[in-house]
Image (tube, rainbow, N blue to C red; front, side, top):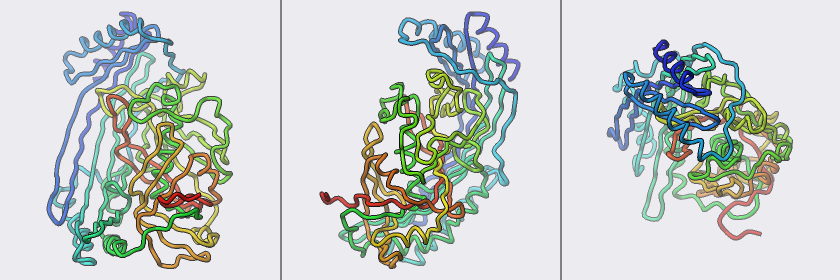
Length: 481
């Protein structure tokens, strides 16, 4: 394979390409789900192909195929597209410099998830469902799911890079849904929207504790049916890391993507309220420290190299509340005369790499969770996302959570409320943060389905945080002044 790729790259150089790269992706996935003690889905998927990217005079051409015997013809098609694109380009693209390396990277795994039988995986989900039914026999629905992925990648380019990678993903989750004639309520574990995922082997699933947490999840779903609606007003909130995962994703992760900032990517989910002049802008309080870290163990946005051959790295994004960096590809970073920080990824062989989040993490603070709660006279501890909405510049947002635990006189009272919703404006919200819990409370969550681009690409991203406290946040749907 290496000789074939290098021959094609030499051909492209000889025929006038300024730069070219080839990515080969071999992807295998397995998706298992159970519902109400029955198998809901059990599917496997496999795709194998390559994509060739060519630059001529700053114009991009791309072509992909699964016909490896016709790679030369595919390469010439990409070259022809690049030449044809020169007439339409407004500004020639430049690729930021990068060290070309020959290397190999593999996700550290203890148990290859594809060596574990489907029967064993189904038994785990059925056991979790049984525990939910045992705790609350009249649940409307129980659900469990597991998802696994193995991706073999090769990257080679005309600058001399040749990188092979094997990336694994494992994870899953459970849900309990309770219903009566007036209402439907759900609790999820370890996170909503099918759970939690990491770059790891089957050991990641074994450590989630799906069976161990099933009864609690079921009881909370049932209790929410009888709970009062969450009050409306302005309250102090302590927000759990499972909800902060999405808050970070939507109100920090997406706005810092440099292709959005430049308007290259706006069709699917908008642009950004940020621009290069905002570097140095106060994004949040002094307690808000955020990094883009593609090196953190088991992060779903962790890898060895991005799909432009840039080594994975840890980049400060917000330091003591001050905005410090965007995330970038080689062509977007060059506009700012910076090196790429290695966040260009494609969701397969048939797509070009675009700027994608790696692991966007809120760093831990120095508080105990009890200290955060102790500082609240009256407010709520919110957990687990239920729904969300955010405008196309990532400024005005609304998040709904599955559950609100009442805080009164600095203590959890044991009372819960259903349907908590909070709203805000991104910089105001992060400036309202006055404490983040310490490292021992810090958790890394993985999201396997971040969509972006046209045609849409799906990326696997991660977010770490500990519970954090926010002051005077608008809660509820009433028109509260």
